[in-house]
Image (cartoon, rainbow, N blue to C red; front, side, top):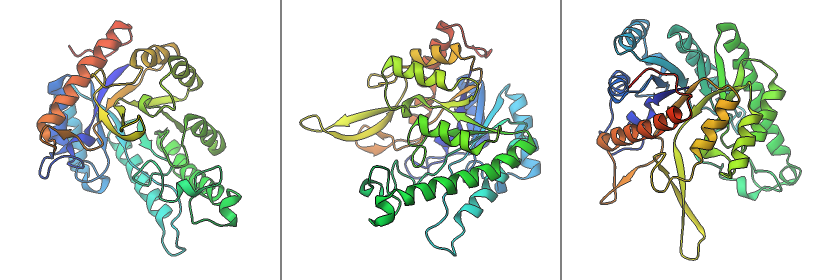
Length: 328
């Protein structure tokens, strides 16, 4: 098992204005920190496929070689649902985009493209709480009370992923479907969707902080259910916050191993070892980081969190005898 830096943290998406850098610079930082690999976040300004020309792809591979840095996964945020208007072609555009990401991976000799089933930008779409048993995808109606809107969305996503999965298979690339709302609201649904797609190029991207529970036995059982199909994993922790009286209030990303980290990392890594997982654990910073003075953090804070995560995670992997990288 090796550790990768997901370059999403350096795109300026959640940092103070102007606090961003390039993919090439992120690669330099990953090598300096001691990561084994770097993952390309396939969106502007980091690594949108149309911005990475054939010449730049060649230079990126040369840079990785000079830095003794492996190229991990191409990481993209996707939503394979069809739009809510017949003349808006959201799914077709998503298919074109993911095919471009697959081509980028192929050109860069990378084996994994991370995808999401249907991501609205939040953990639930705006109508979700109005459903009747399942999450809602449209206003209250007879269709909603029969879950027909949710079923329609499920089959739209299944169809779109299957199309890009066939393309990926032809290119020798594996799609890592990450369990992430919407559609794949839990790991059981992810397994069901993969089974229904029925294309062997679709595997699992399994992220511990998105598990339904951090109970150690639940963590072990979930990981073991992914034996043979887990091909990728992110390592960020999510800590819940509670208001007066203990009610759920908010959440924030925290560094693995830090004071507020609730995740069972040692249990998770041990279970991954037991199922024979030998891929990357890719650290990411993908939500707002609020620092002292109630300000958005900058590159210095991003660097610190990537370094702290590496130190903690590598220590655990070495303790368990399953770190296979060669970086000190």
